[in-house]
Length: 231
Image (cartoon, rainbow, N blue to C red; front, side, top):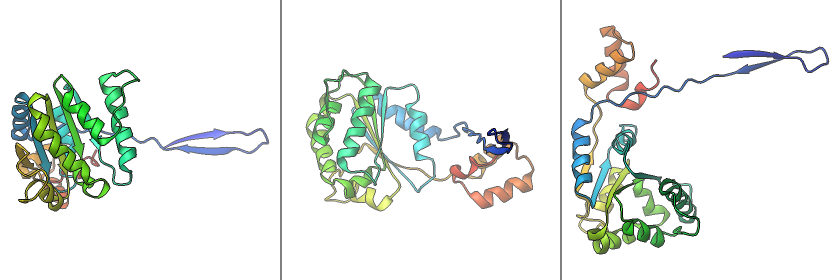
C-alpha cells in the first residue's frame, strides 16, 4: 500500500491509498514429455493435438510455453460472446499477429478457416476451451472437420485445441459419431504435478522447511495454479 495526502485547497486533506499489486510470473516447470510430443507434431505439420485435463492443471501454461518464439495464434473461446463477436476478435488478432493489410477480411467461420488452411507458412493455431463451440455455434466444429478432411494436405498448420470439460471433449473427438472422431493426431491428458515437482517449486519459492512444504502440498496438491499465490 502507498499513501498519498492531497490538499484540495480548502484546508482539508484527502488521503488516497494506492494498492500496488505485484504480479509474479512463475517460471515454467516440468512437462518435458508433453513438450517433446508437441515439438514432434509441430515438425510434421499439418498436425492436430487435443490437450485436456481439469481446470487450473496448467494446460494454458503448457501451450504458451510451447508457442514461445514460434509463429502462433491464440484464440480463447469466450462462452459469453456470440460467434460473430468471436470471429471479429479472432480475425483482429490474426491480422495483428501476421501484419495483414486492412483490405483482407476473414471474420466469419468459413472465411477464417479458409484463410488459416490456405496460409502458406508454418503456423500454430490454438483454440482454448474449444468445446464451448458446442453451445455457441456447433457448426464451427463440423466446418473444422470439413476443412481438415479436404485441405489439410496443403496446409502448414499445427492446430491445438484445449478444453477443461472432458465429457464435451469426448463428445467432439472420441465417440464414434463425433464430428472430429479420429482427426486428432494425439489426445494429451494433462495430470497434476507429483510431489517431487511440487517440492521443487516450493523450494524455488523460498519455502524450504519440510513441514511447511508438506502442509502446502497437502493443501494444494499438484494443481500448479495455486502455487502462483506464494511468494
